[in-house]
Amino acid sequence: MPRLAILDRDGTLVDVVRDAETGTVQTAFHPAQLRLLDGVVDGLAALASAGFTLAIATNQPGPAKGHFAREAVARTNGALVERLAAAGVTIAAVEACLHHPDGGEGGDTSLVGPCACRKPRPGMLLALMARFGAGAADTWMIGDSSADLEAARAAGVRSALLFAPGRCELCPLRHGPAGLGSPDLAAPRFDELVRRLLAAG
Ligand SMILES: [Mg+2]
Ligand SMILES: [Zn+2]
Image 1 (tube, rainbow, N blue to C red):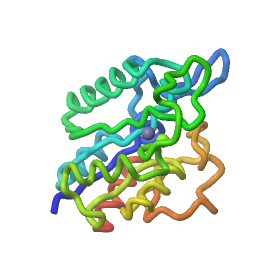
Image 2: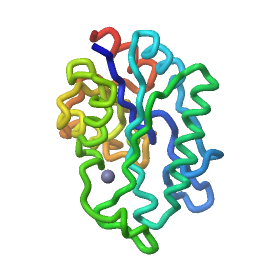
Image 3: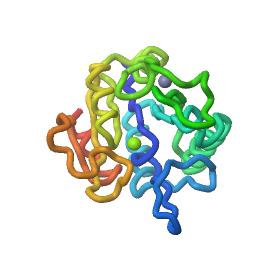
Image 4: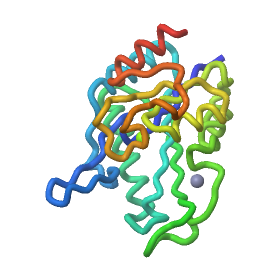
């Protein structure tokens, strides 16, 4: 059976974007904003060496909320895949949920409403597992938020939580993972998380 690692994007592979003047935090929507987190390239390379297919599953509600165009999401995701490829890491697929249940001013109304793909729902995970023929026992979800953990649970796959206290301002786990359900394993850096994942078999 193929093994599949499903990766969250923001706060897991790339950092959130901080505006020093306003103090606001958002997710990257332009290639120039992409900053890989420490240990990501090494960790992804280790997963690939161990036989994992790598795929990204990311919630990107910006277009539904009117924050930026859906083309910006595609361009930014494409740039991330290219940057990782240049570092020797192949991302086999990117699934992005562009929906948001409530939307926002100026948002694309065709993207507003409930969907099966927005994490914590498991739609993107199940689609990737079907696409690559990976069973639940051979699939891991790697992320930094409770939505990632819940999506993993809903898809029946194991979960690895990147948890660096105080780092992720957007992350619902910023005050600690207690009470949000426990991942199968956790670590504060991506490469360390992967070492633990590979040791878990
Ligand atoms: Mg995240
Ligand atoms: Zn969706």
